[in-house]
Amino acid sequence: MWALTITCVLSAAISVVGAGTAHAGLMQFENGFEGDQSTSWESDSAGDGSAGIEINSGNARTGANNGWVRGQFGGASEKTWVYTAGVPNVAGAGCVAQIYVRPRLRTTLVLEIWTPSGGKRYSVDRTVDGGGWQRVYTDRWPLFGEQNMQFRIVLHGSGDAGVNWVRLDDLVMQCYW
Image (cartoon, rainbow, N blue to C red; front, side):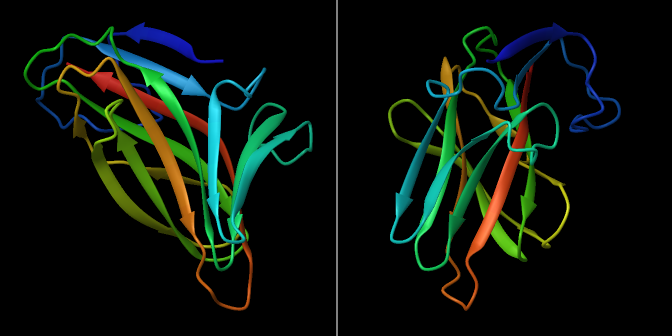
């Protein structure tokens, strides 16, 4: 379930505002795959790729549940909508996002932000080493008054000898103006 927090300070989770930059407000959205996520997260897959949610498996970074994507020759994504209508449509309004990942192998993940009309607002590749939980994040991207934005994390299969499996947890998106 999305928790909505309005606060006047940036959390330590994402350090995105440079020194000397003034902001009037901040909204923070969090989703750690807890509760009934069947209506919050959607998955896509191609080829041998797949995605899903693990419930009480003992693999979560925090809480009891986590998401995952896997693939070797195909790809997969997990995606969720973030309600951003509470962010004023003013010049300079923008957002950042982060999610924790635990890949089995060194891999590159794609973080994307999409509009309701199907336009890709932002995309960045992040390469992570296999092993423990690691934070991946977006740079700041403009909101332009959108009332909903979709966060996607995408794994494209590498086609090599190993199937990569990446666990996901603790998405945070911060929008500020």
